[in-house]
Image (cartoon, rainbow, N blue to C red; front, side):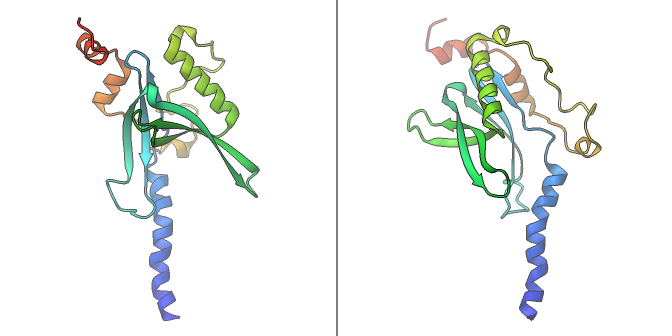
Length: 186
């Protein structure tokens, strides 16, 4: 009885603190950038660990970059009784080109319909460029803009890419980089 009373506050704190911390530090969005000229995909990932709740290495934004050719979309299905039955989510998986082993998975969308649509748009952009994209009814929005967001959403930290990744993801490669990556003489 006394042991249960002594252990219950730390256990409750260990269960509740990750959720409170997530509410306070989770960014407004986790965008994905596609750079057609570099053939790279940039993910703005927020990582957290429910076991090591005070670890600075396991919590926080971790932008990562992968080659476009190593990224594929995959659907996974989970049967969740009480939550609508069959749930179909779409993840982007990154594979090691040498071993075909999945080295990372990134959440893409909550349903199969949107996943197929978004993946088709991403592939079209990477193959043919922005000119090939359809005209969107609702233009993309900047999630750092507070206009139209709920008050609670405005309290979340804004998306802030590291400067070198921000520049690389928005620019074309220099001529030396193109020559090096294609192994041709320039």
